[in-house]
Length: 242
Figure 1: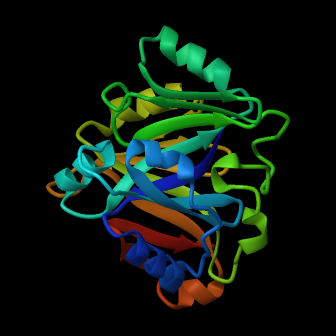
Figure 2: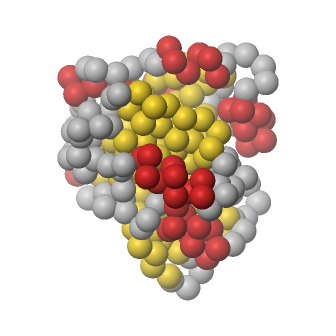
């Protein structure tokens, strides 16, 4: 299981793109017309072989729009995972009573989004790309379009190393995500880590104004780390690590 993409919700797509360029020096690879049916525009930017996405509502009544109102500004929104058999994961989770809210079953892309009431912390999606090994760094990724490898810029950032989710009960939610992702769980004093092949999900206690998807760890170059190894960007705590 690989953490392949993280989506951030923002009301200002153009400003978000400028922030990505300034802080991460990454380029837009794709603007997906397929998300317009959800009342959204987006940008998808490669970070090495992983991706950061921004979704921005352009009409009233969207799920992302309601989330932005709840958060009072831009915030972490989705964690998107890739495995080699998303249909198997979908079947397993649905048998456990976890509801499916959206699915795609195309020849080149299998997509499953699950109900956030059943898997709290961040909207969770598990995908697979037939005939592609999910752990290969630059394996195909249809949500980023066809030409994303041509715009990769690794001057500052090289990949996604993890996320932080703040919740009322880190141990229970860590148990759930460990099962959902078929991944190892590691316990510490007041937090839980779920270890994937390429990243770690850290579950920590929430506090006022600090809940759900609150942080991202990015593999970074010495140049970016020397500029500062921690920033706040679009409502998220960003940490740059080697």
